[in-house]
Image 1: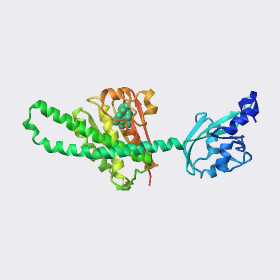
Image 2: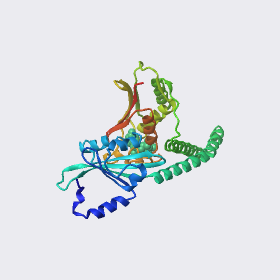
Image 3: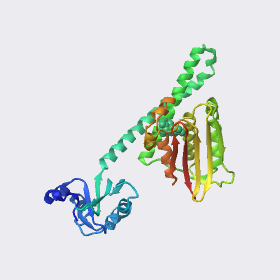
Length: 351
Ligand code: ADP
């Protein structure tokens, strides 16, 4: 077996592989290791060749089944490269690129895995979220005090001229926005630091949904949006963190309200399925442009069409929502057509 580089001097290739700071493992079609470079043998204490990929899977505590990942690529069920992130080995973090290799006749000859040490990257990420967390905590107190003082002033505000009243409400609105942003930033920092605790308890989901819909009714009314709720009464209580479930519904409903033009409609539904419960929030709004759909769960990402209709948003809501849904073992996804509407779906596995 030779990788496609056959025309090149094999000594050079071998020396390159040996001293590459990234780990490289090359296997034949039977998942037997033909070559593990220095970075890998030093890390794992495995020999340079002759062992099977299962050995590597075992050393990485089964976090990843390397053989199965290579099988996926060989079957072409997924893209030609599978990228796995955040694989832990001792105190180090790795990402692994798994790809197929070919012989000199372009026939499949096996696979290769490239391990990259991303420990420093992870440390920087953690330092950044710690900084955000500290800054947000520091901001919370003065913003809260500002809000309290503004609310105290509100009863006297009617005595002021109309222009001054307008300014007062602008200040109040800005303060609320800043409080929401800081609270989102704190949630993101907790998620990234792995300190977002959940406290699951038996929760009446339909009741919680009705409460959120009621709380947001005035926002929907301002835009003449009709909000319909289709939730069966025969759903037993579900053991879930009620605060996180509420956040998920609030984020999805608030987005539907923000990104649906006046006169549109929103439907929140909950159904029992064979595998648990599926919820959905559908709107007849502006939709998500196809080119943006891949990026929609990325922190701070906002589509241009959304930023045009609603200038002040953080782009953090869906990142937080996805992380909560995945934490309770569910999945979050959407279907959307620009100009026609969007439906977000989430699942809660059966308990
Ligand atoms: P934001 O605070 O900007 O709403 P999110 O993370 O909740 O942040 O959403 C990210 C982006 O996803 C939005 O800015 C918008 O571009 C898009 N989006 C989310 N929900 C909808 C929706 N219901 N309809 C259209 N676009 C949406």
